[in-house]
Image (tube, rainbow, N blue to C red; front, side, top):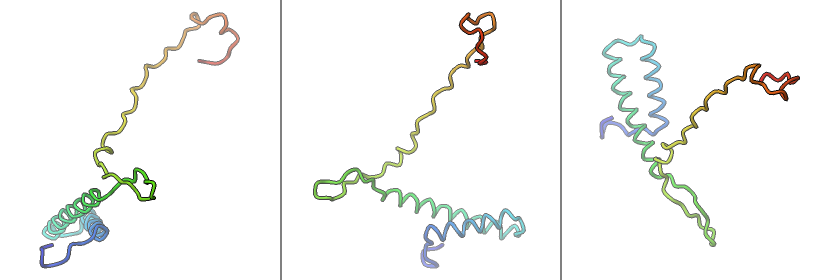
Length: 114
């Protein structure tokens, strides 16, 4: 994809071509030299896709409010906000089963096993 040779593909075109390259390489029926050429092309296409995604991410704005005149108020998308996810709470310690001797008199006659 040299500057004067061909135009840079859009995201969908680059991704589609990359998927075809991966499928061909996974089949394993390509000669080594051709496989290396295709692999290099795939790496360039992957870099192109990442570049296009990064560019798109920078242009995304979040609608935060609408002013009295009805004009939208936006703020720039913060990609780092999605990397900090709430971590699930640590699992609590398992409850110990009470032995029959530890049951109180109000437990008698109750067939619930817990």
